[in-house]
Amino acid sequence: MKNINTRVMDYVVLFQDHKIEIDQVPEDIKNDVVEIASYLQHGDVKKDGVSHEQNGLND
Image (cartoon, rainbow, N blue to C red; front, top):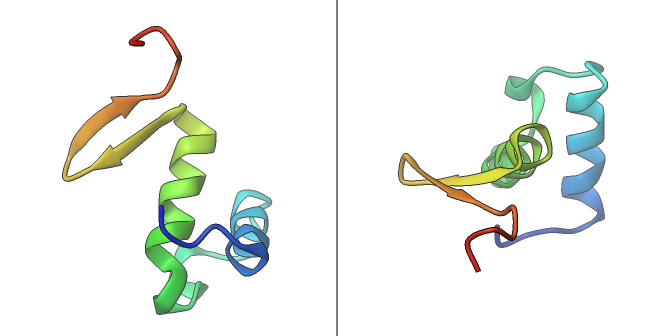
């Protein structure tokens, strides 16, 4: 995640509340919105098809 800012988080909330579809998110922030929404839903970060769980058990 490179751009965690108010604009990105606003779109994450809109997407999670089913107010917009992912194809309505501007292209310049779409990857960040998808990554944050995925993390919030599933609790892991997926990069290059590999799951990197962020549960604190792997420390």
